[in-house]
Each structure stands twice: as structure tokens, then as C-alpha cells.
Image 1 (cartoon, rainbow, N blue to C red):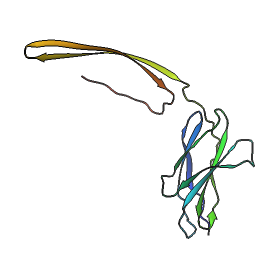
Image 2: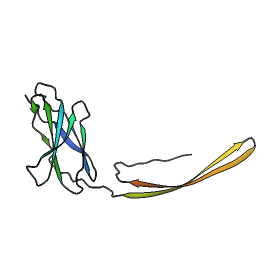
Image 3: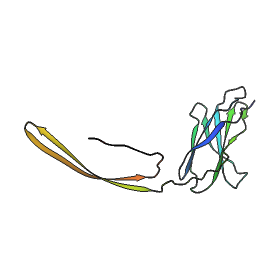
Length: 150
């Protein structure tokens, strides 16, 4: 027998040209080991245009990043479990996914001065370093809270 559909298919990440999906193994393997998962996608509005975009080995973590998508285009995804009898029914995302950049390109300039005071055999001297750092942020997926103490 073929396996049942994978469960809990969900979106775990979106960028301007990719979507990351995760899922869990099906409840029934059909009596033989599941050896892979097949991921298909299609553009929304094109009902009969499913395309295989990735195959994931069952020994890997059940997460897949689908790259090369068009920014602003709506997509639908589905995942099949496959054993020696073939692929079972798909788990299909109920909602469409639209890859898009979350921030565009954010540029942060960081200016800093580091001063090191050294005392060695009754001699004191200081070393000062001034630096400018340009940081490009193209994707931000968490909040950072930190305090630096010297």
C-alpha cells in the first residue's frame, strides 16, 4: 500500500525568492518504509500546472527551502510521501504563499572608537582605533536585544 499524506505541512520562512516548508511523517507508511518526500508547487490561478521542485530523503530533517521563486507571485505547495509502492496522496497548503522581501535592503553604518590603555613597567600608553563598519541587512527574522559591558 501507499503511505497516507504527510501531516502538519506549514510555512516556516519566506524571502523575496524562496519559501521554506516543514511537515511531519504520515500517520501510516503503507506497510513499507517511506524513503522520500516529493514537493510540488504551482502558481496560484494555474490549477493544472504542478511542477516537482524538490525531493527530500526521509533520513533528512523534514524541512525544504524552495528557491528561485518570483517576488510578488502567489504560489501553492504540496508534499507527497513515497514508499516502494509509490507516492501517496498529498498534503496541500490551504493558503497561497507570496514570496516578497521583508525589508528591502537596509543599510546601517556603525562608527566606533576603541581605546586600550596599557600600563607596563611604570609606562602608560593608549592605543585608539577608529573604524567605520557598513552593514547590509537583507533579511531579518528575529529581534535582537543585547547589552555590551566592558
